[in-house]
Image (cartoon, rainbow, N blue to C red; front, side):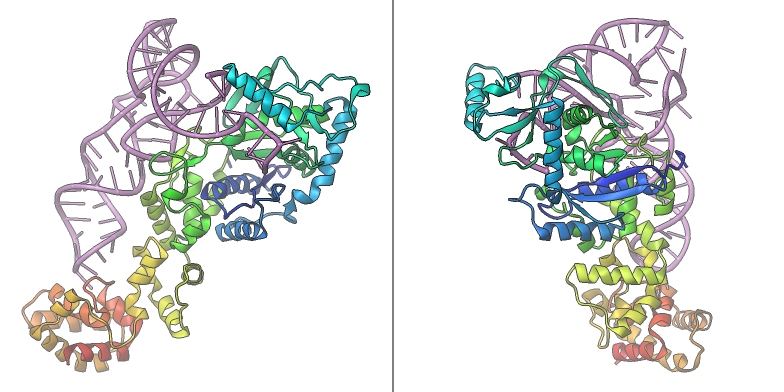
Length: 470
RNA sequence: GGCCCGUUCGUCUAUCGGUUAGGACACCUGGUUUUCAACCAGGUAAGAGGGGUUCGACUCCCCUACGGGCUGCCA
């Protein structure tokens, strides 16, 4: 273990339910999960659904589905941030009582006017509320928001496990609103209250929150709460180095499932993207759990590389258990909207697995390599296969069938027959293998001819040879 | 505009002041082979630019360039 186990660790993943689970979010969740689980700690899930306009139950369901597919399980119930709004408001009022927050009667129009005037003058200062130090006796009977009374001088230091010491001068930060004039909490307040109440010890999230951390830390301080360990990780970029967006194609975790990448491979790849532990490249989830630490996270944004993703997935498909592979393959079929396997195909697929899994990087590829087993007579032949079945070849295939009737169906018994056929016709084995592939699979690129014969069995083999030589 | 973060082979990265700058993916060459894949052996390829500090900088400091983020009564 890179670090001692620490059952006291509590991490969380806190997405906004405004779409499906973004691949970057999936990686953030994975890092949190690895960190907590690797230390015997807890991993919590909170849905930040305070934006009622954009939050949907469908999005929440999609996020849970994405996490589940990735194999990331969370402890306890999923927390809805929206449902905790009363608690947030309570804390805002406690801040008022502590003198660390104040009522602000400036309207949004006032603020907009202030900003417009400052910008016109070429300045971009923070908004300073005239109500910050106002005598409560002068408070009008009007709607107000609650603003944090942030320090106006000095600096806030964020000690971050990834970013190091980040110093923000307090004068660059305004008195952020913690409770809106309609009584609803803002995100900045809600995250802090929730993380505190949920006893989160390590906040591992995208570095787009790094600046926010300073203001959030002020809330911790204002309430006298313990600040969690911060770890702001760089975002993932597309292959062109730009922030990952729709135009890069796949951005949702569900897209990757539908493209046929195995979850174990995704976990490995995503773990390794922006994190390193020496030369470790291909590892199991158990190994990742043992190795993962915050120190190994890089500060620069990483780009998605599909070639490496595929290579990583190929290793995982090859090392996966056949039955587990079949099960996940069926999950892929459903996710991709492809027809499910019949019982017969399922049995054949399982039988074919050892001969195809070492040559596939994705599920579509696995299916394609196993096409010989999943297809049924009459076998459809592509152009090259048809060309391979010339008159001479058909004659050789025809001469083969009687011999195949009686041998025991093992590679050891089959091999002498085929090599003899080649030798008898004065040709290399490759020249016999080509028409055999064409007859058995309808293609010229297939797994080993012996593997195919053993998987589909004697009767099917003979029938296909007869079809081809007729 | 202000503030914050980043920059090592094409890509992911190792290095934590002294290395022929290492590994992986990709790519190229050769081998193996029953086609393809896999596999084996080689190879091409890197510390953004400029100043410092130091006996010595990829490593520490400053500037510039480029990229990203924040700058909401969004999250």
